[in-house]
Image (cartoon, rainbow over the protein chains, first blue to last red):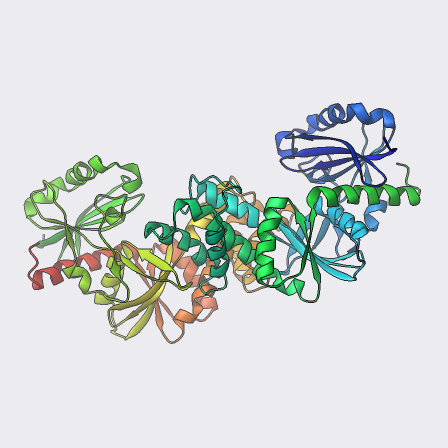
Length: 309
Length: 309
């Protein structure tokens, strides 16, 4: 076993992922838990984490945490850093937590910027993945675009390791809301496995038409009522409309920039399908891979800068 | 009491409204019930209606019904008429129901057309309101635009009593979904009475910016997280974004056409506020008024054409 570098903690609203990683970004051990922020109260955070990482504490390596753990409803609210932001600044701005753990524990700050609509936008967790992408991607081409699909999909641009801007789209959440609660598709499981390629593509085609998103979504109901759209194609059709609208709103970002897609294989494949239709050149990175590489970069940079990890 | 003309039944998914009306469109008596389509099974329709209209049956006037009562999950599925459609055709296409009522009972057919996105669109109930608007509006200007705000907002154009085209937007439903279930505003009552004018206007302004609707909606979360947007303004802000997007997508319809807004006072006032910002000239009609006038026109036209009412 190679020498561990740090314990990395990706703590979101719904999930908690802990990794023991070495300096090459190899995951030596990992544990997943459903004890996300929303399932916990203030008093739970330290004991929950302590129990999960107990077997690794004898390595005497620091704990680095990213995600909603740093939000107001998380363990400790950590102020956002301002975008535009050189991502290397994350390492010098780690927030040291006061804990009873026998190793140092830090939270990575999130980032606040101005989104496409001219209003404030925020991220927590994605900044670490972007740092990981930047430090590990093969070619050092200057300006790139990124897309992190998910519940709250983030799009933006990085220029030589500098996060220039980003915007959040509520694509994944809207899909779940429509599948679970709407008159369009109530009771449809939001299963990503039941993929009907033809109806997904029909949804993507539709967003290039007139009428706006709220009209386009309603066609799922009218086409169902008139018997055109079978219930087996309904979720894929809605997914095509939403991912199509998401991509279309961000196409301009990808002009003259290579796009990196950071997400799960299933969702990334859907984005890739839409992006190829618009002739966008894409590289895929898994979210875990980007996240782990980000923690490696943070731990190394902090060491170099003499931060007591 | 003037001589009754018909018993008008507006039977939607959530509500059932019955009116006894005379030939001038005066409502002589009315009853409201929450026994909408969704609350009833097939065996319930006739007894529920029969009980409600019992006191009026001695007038020996026909029953005319419009709305979801004619849908697949309603009392009796009545085929859609095709748009473009001369609305006077509704009177000759009334569907006669087989009932044990001592008077004749008819269902008004819905209308099927091609919406703005080039796909099938449907209405049931609104066709009767549009007929009412057409036959009772003061000036007989040729081509007009209409907007019927609500759960599923309808926009379209009428030319000399001919329904040329229409499109449905899921504006009201999306607002309710976001207020009841989303991470943006979960637990917010969707109260229309708590109107924060400034935040509503801020939402309307936002949809004229970049990023697309799914990004614009997310600003409700980022602006809340950063403390800009108070929870007292949240629902109004979302309402402004959605109604703003709805109006913006349909502005072209109102070019060179007078717009009639048919809805409840509360919702119409919000649309009116947005429309005035875009300098659209609007007349308001209440949904009940349009509906009642439509039933009057149907009953009279059917009599004239010798249909045994």
